[in-house]
Image 1 (cartoon, rainbow, N blue to C red):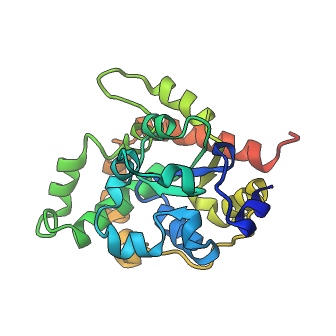
Image 2 (image 1 turned 135 degrees about the horizontal axis):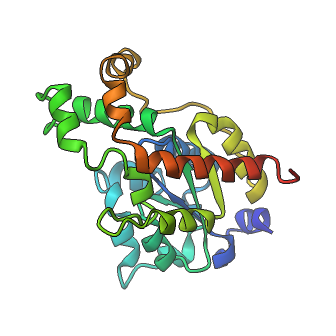
Length: 241
């Protein structure tokens, strides 16, 4: 049914819509670029024109764009990707298939730090120690945060329950296998060609070597969240176990 909708260009039903909850630094940009290679522009939001030109530097505001009263994008497109939290994504797409990729918290945290140091003017001239100090309260909760966790509420279990409600949970460390499984589940023949936005390997290794233990001490919440994600992924991988 999904492929017939794609080939005919019909407006998809809500049950045939797929929404990526893009947790930063988990491979979501690579996945989005892959979709651009395989899908027609009218099938996804944002498509290449929207991502690179029309809404350039506004990827974080995709949720706001989708909420506009005169926007028909939610009815017209089939695949969506943005840094939408689970509660917002579920509000926008009550019947849609929400999915995500979750990453080893230490790998994700180091990737975030390097990204900030290299690409963000605010952090470029700061030392690693200073960046870690500034980010210490958010660095280890970023993934659970996207699924509704709030430090003041100590509601990790709620975030975990939301994770269980998603259509699919992939693991960044097994990205090729995750893509293969999602391709099978959605009957959409795509395959990851190349990863993007990876960061400089030598810088990643430097941060891991010098600051890995300190960073790891900050990751208790996301580590618990990640372990649940791994269990869900394994259940996708081996459904008969």
